[in-house]
Length: 263
Picture 1 (tube, one colour):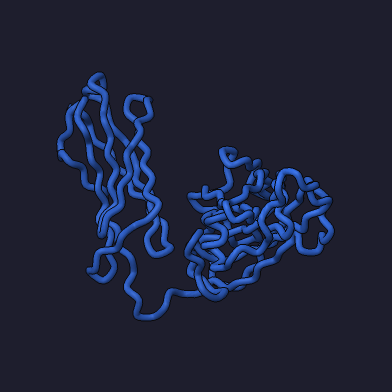
Picture 2: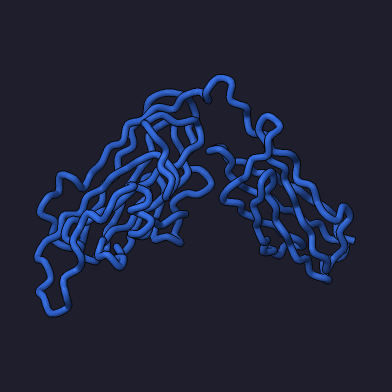
């Protein structure tokens, strides 16, 4: 999940502030604020150009205001046939209920310049090549003088990767030490490259279990590798440690699983 803040919203759009600064506390609050919704391809702070993408990509849902009233808004979005949410999908932790459609509530925030806005970034995966349309609607809680811009439909095309482009390759997870003992620190590393050139992964996530208990992993991304470090309990001797490393590399999502018996 990526909830967008106003400062990140501006970086995503590559724009200066669209709205004036908030009025002083002594001034009456505006009676109405025009809230508008935009959908685009890309990663928060790094939008992808054009309206074509490969099969694994991100969608950014951007909520802006014209007057700058801080208020709660509700975003409703569903995916058409052929698209499904990826690893980073709408979830209750960000105020969302359901996924078909996802109904998400958040309170817009203001930055030091007075711009008020918000939004979300989520992963999406296409089952096949072709053209798609994604439609979403934002509902404000304050009076909105223009409801026509509260719904946005984004049209784009999923295409084959560019010819000649080297595919990203991820190795199996390698454990260090190779034969770990209970109570020790276990490191799982996946090598990531394209055409023999190291690739730096993003959004590394770590999960693991041992003896029915969940272990927290420390993720790390470096040029050519994704790493997760786990501290195993001393009481886990003779039990099996099972885990996975998930990450994104050049818009492709990877998950590598591992298991080992603790000595």
